[in-house]
Image 1: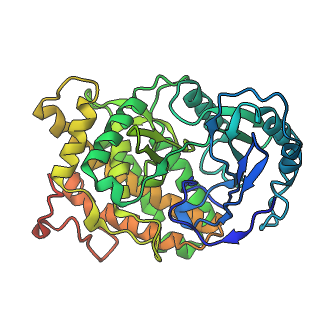
Image 2: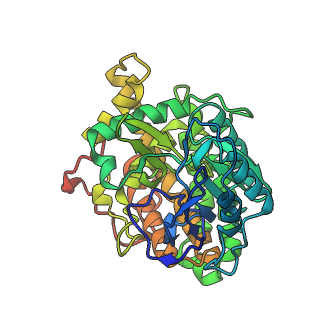
Length: 409
């Protein structure tokens, strides 16, 4: 079987965002030894995955085949017959062996081959541990097998959300409840906030990779102090909730089974313990993005959720465990979330600077970073008592009180 190149398909449910390179996606039916070609998914910008995937839909057949079809072994050998990128190797022999062993139980699976050059953003060992934990506790795709540079997963029969889905009140409530469940996971390891250390590490890498002109153009030398200010302002509150956070909950990382209304959160590369308000802030900020347009790097902050939309989400989040929150609890979390949008803008702004140097995807990472930094400086005077002048001239359209879209609280 061969895989051929084709443009990005916005209806595809293959998507691991913000991590680099490309996806190789081929549907392979293990139990019948039959291939359903799905082609080459070349995702742009934040829609790009950090490796190659032979994607093959993940459903357990519940049957025990007496013998493996003869074609299965040959198909396993042929999965990456004609790679469209010089970095793509044939599927490792151990992966083929696992696929063959799964043929009697799983009709379709997903093979994920890890990409290279992502160490600056996350530790692959942490990501693997998280995936294994999530799989074991029924929170994501089942882990079916591992090999040296990848793994084999269940392929979820559900659709990936679109940008507009995040604004649907019924879907938003499902996401809020699932996020609360995610935050309550008792992950092994130290339960400390990772946000500030990761941000400082990324900033150091961004400065190292940037030219002096780029450091000046993006005011990177000012960001150290801003991280210090934010950490002091946003840490230590007695009421602050710390939980296991996804940290990248944009629409492409959420899947919905429309028959059962079950929501699955996928792709845990950036997951770690953090203030839950930061994770919700990230989700709200992602509503300004649509990565399936002609200009996927452009953010529209007029689409940031208004106060009623945010309040509805927070109510759904807090009440998902059964107890109804009081109004002061809701308002306190809302205000904390708004402040954490500032940290989120710095986080993905610095990410954009690094990505511009290490990724070759057709995505304007620098412009994306500029927009995130601009939002930081434009929003800061409204959210913090510190009044550092913005180095950017243009104000944000969504923090103008005269605009009346309910952003300020």
